[in-house]
Amino acid sequence: MAVNEPLPGTSDLWEPEVLDWINLEKQARNIFSRYGYTELRTPIFERTDVFVRNLGNETDVVQKEMYTFQDRGGRSLTLRPEGTAGVMRAIANKGLEQGEEARVFYFGPMFRGERPAAGRRRQFHQVGVEAVGSDSPWMDAECIAMLVHFLAELGIHGSRVLLNTRGLPEDRQAISQALLDYFQPHSNALCEDCQRRLSTNVWRMLDCKNPACHEIALGAPQILSLMGEASRTFFAEVCAGLTELGVEYELAPRMVRGLDYYVHTVFEITHPGLGAQDALAGGGRYRISLPGDKRTFEGIGFAAGMERLLLARESLGLQSPPSNRTDTYIVSLGAPAIPVGLRLAGELRQAGLGGRVKADFSNRSLKAQMRSANREGASRVLILGEAELSQSSVICRNMTTSEQVTLPVGELKNWFLQA
Ligand code: AMP
Image (cartoon, rainbow, N blue to C red; front, side):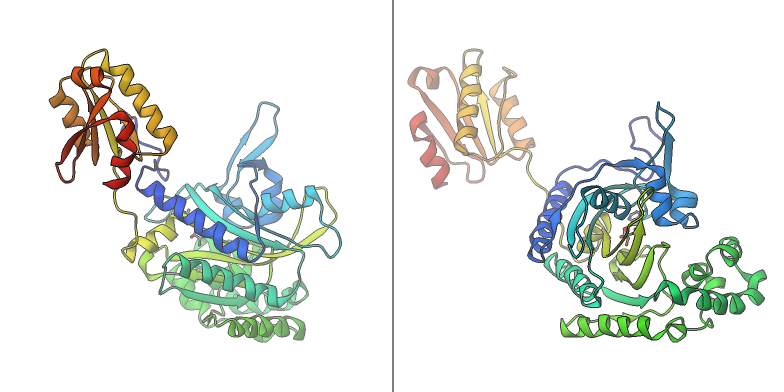
């Protein structure tokens, strides 16, 4: 790795991609606020137990992927691998009255020590939402519909909504036993992770990506059919809500998603433009309790990978065009012209004229400064020479049409507004 390259799985972001990111955030704010969500910003690191308690000790994220370190006071801290746990800590800290709801959205970098691949990064970014305090299935339907609305606003067509339920905790024991009874006889054929999961997290074997495990999982009992009445009714209402809102979805009976805190609804959105890592977003309903806090918070939320949203847009030909570094370039010829160019640039910026304005302080030849203006993509060049200084005028060149006029400085505004 060259010395100045970013670490594997991380990257530097330049324009015009930055413009796509800004647009993504703008659309998220626009859509989510229509549904009553407000923005929340939480710290990038938290006490490690905030994640371990919430995500579950047996999850891949906690077992293998967290960036955990000790600070100088000997505390164990972790760079956030996902957004929900920190958001829940913030909501618990602020307090939620009985019957009160919190609806928030967030953006930001997340960190997971995964093996980098196309679409899989160590620092990636998520946009996510959490609606906490409502235990209604209609809320789940509305939340999924909001995500679908957001994708449509971004122009991302062709994605699939995959839906399943994990039911209520009271159904778990019987389902886990049925799954264990099914998988146990196949144990020799399972991947290493699934062999461990037999004793730690048998549900995760249902959506293991290993081809041999997948083949075996196809014959596993359907978890929905093993659930009690309350779980099945809840799921039926989520489905009815989606139909009510015109959201197309597919049932995915083996999708359980990685984290232990899910109850009832789980969902994922995939997009064919993403290649092997085709998950655009995922989420579900959860019950979370925080370290040292007796309360349990129930909510529904999702997170979408921002890099993947942009990749999906790119696959549809929707990325921002390359932008110019400069719109207006001020050429100053000779030392006395330089402070005049400096002031003129300041005045244009104050007046909001000329877009991205740059004054050249190099005291180079006209030819050299014009070459720089071209390289930067400037569409207008203002030239200040000795004659112009003495007359308080300026040469104005439209680089697109090659038209050039000399104008008093006072008339510059009109020239910018006309051309
Ligand atoms: P998760 O929190 O694992 O459900 O992830 C939610 C979304 O974040 C996924 O659907 C992806 O779009 C994105 N994502 C998760 N992990 C990564 C990663 N390592 N690199 C890039 N995007 C990711």
